Length: 113
Image (tube, one colour):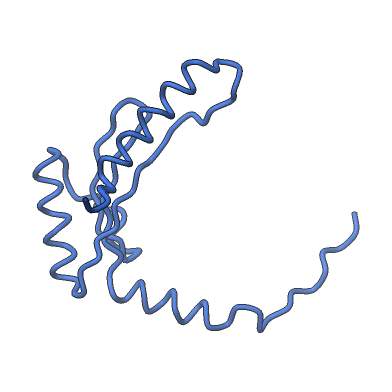
């Protein structure tokens, strides 16, 4: 039987919720976001997938993300968010270019205070 990542994720979330409920002394974050990243090749295919998800979850595309190369939608369940994101080709290329300099530039040491 093939591995069912969806069922495993849901079971893990339920186990986490039960564990946190049973251990009220443990600190927790104020919010949680579960991300789905589109894996399609073209921007058009990625955006179409996110549009379909937005329709299914009853949300809209987050217009504030588009200038940064992200096409995204989300739905909140109190402090828990389901977020579907497409990282567009220009943003992926910009990230690869920025990463190509990793380790090449050494900043001056911070001044002692």
